Image (cartoon, rainbow, N blue to C red; front, side, top):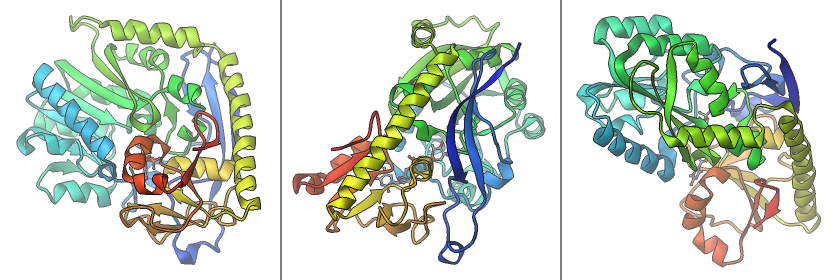
Amino acid sequence: MSKKIEFLDLGQQPLANYYLNKSQIKKKEQKYRLIVCFNNQNKLVFIKKTFSSKMMFNNKYPYRSSMSKTMQKSFKELAKQIKLKINPKKILEIGSNDGSFLKNFKKSMSIGIEPCANVEKITKEQNFNTIPKYWDTKLAKNILKKHGNFDLIYSANTISHIKDLNDVFKSIDLVLSKNGTFILEDPSLIECLKRNTYDQFYNEHIYVFSYLSLNNILKKFNLEIYKIENLDIHGGSNRYFIKRINNKIKIEKSVIKQKREETKYGLNKKNTYFKFTKRVQESKKKLISIFKYCKSKNKKIIGYGATAKSTTILNYCNINDQTIDYFLDTTKDKQNKYTPGTKIKINQYKGSIKEDVDYVFLGAWNFKKEIFKKEKKYIKAGGKFIIHTPYPKII
Ligand code: JHZ
C-alpha cells in the first residue's frame, strides 16, 4: 500500500526565486509550509505543497546557468562525451535555460525547450531553435509532428521541477527514438542526506531523486537506467543515462553500485529520513549559534550567492537583514532586489570581495571551489566564510 510519510518540516517559506523590489518589501509575501515527505512504496522523496509551473517558471525567472564556470565546464565535457559515444543526429534539451548546454552543438541539430520566456529569449537571440513552452505531452506531440524523433534528449535540473512525472515520461516515450538515450541530471538524494543539505528542498524542487525511486517510475514507461555518473555539481548530482528496456545496451556497473549504496544507506527505509531530520534540526541550532557568536563580537557578515537554496536556510533559521548586511551576486536580475522572506539586499558583485567584512555566508556553497579560487585575496587576508554543509562551521 502506498504510504506518504511526512518527515521534515522546514517551516513557513516564501517562493524561492521571488526576489523582492524595494516597493514589495513592506508588503505581505505569499508563504507556504515546506514539508518533505517519503513515499515508502515507490521510494520517492517530495515536497507536500506544490505550486503551478506558471507561478514558478515565467518571464521573470532570475536563474541563469551560465553564471558559473563550473556549470559551463560540466556542459562542455558532457557534450564532448555525447559526441564521442552517442553521436546523435538530433538533440532535444528540456529546460535549456540560457543555452549553456545547447551552445556546444550545431544550431541545426538541436532544439531547446524553455518555458521562462525572458531566459529563452537569450538563447533564441543567438539563433538557436528554442520553444518557450512547458514540457508536456501536448508539446511532445507537436514536436514529434514537426521534427520527428530525437536520438538524444537531455534535461538538467528540470525534471525534478515538474509535478506530473507520469506526463513527463509519457512525453519522453513519445519523442525518444527506438535506440535513443535520455540523459537526466538532478541533485542526488543520498548526497543531500549525507551532506545535510536540507536546502535542496524548496518549492521548485518538487522531488529529490534517488536511483531507487527513479527506476520504479521509469519501469512503467518501459524505460530503464543503464549508466549513472556521480557529479559534484550542485552539491552532488546524478547523471542518469536512460534507454528503452528492449534496447540491448548493457547495464553498466555504475547502476549496480548506486543501487547497492542507496540500499545500504537505507534510502528505502523511513527511519533514514527521521535520522536526517534530527541532523537538520541540529544544523539549524548550530548555524544560529555561529551567527549569534559573530554578531556578539560586532562582526560584519555578508552573503555570497543569493541562491534559491539559501531561501530555505535563511527562512528556516530566521536569519534576516539584522544578521546579514547584504548579499553579493553576479546575476543582474537579482541585483538591487531583496531575498524572499528575509529581505536582505542583494548587491552587484564587482569582481572580488572588496568590502571590509569579517564573515561571508556562502549561499552558493555548491560552487565553493570556484568561489575560493576567485577570492584568494580575501582568504589570504584572513577573511572567513560561514558554511552550513556538511555541518555549520566557520572556515
Ligand atoms: P545556484 C537554481 O538554484 C534554481 P540556485 C533551480 N531550481 C535549480 O535547480 C538550480 O539552480 C540548478 C551566484 N554566483 O546555481 C549566481 C555568484 O554570485 O547554486 C547565482 O545567483 N558568484 C533551477 O539558485 C547563485 O550564486 C559566483 O562566483 O540554488 C548560484 O545559484 C557563482 C559561482 C555564483 O542555484
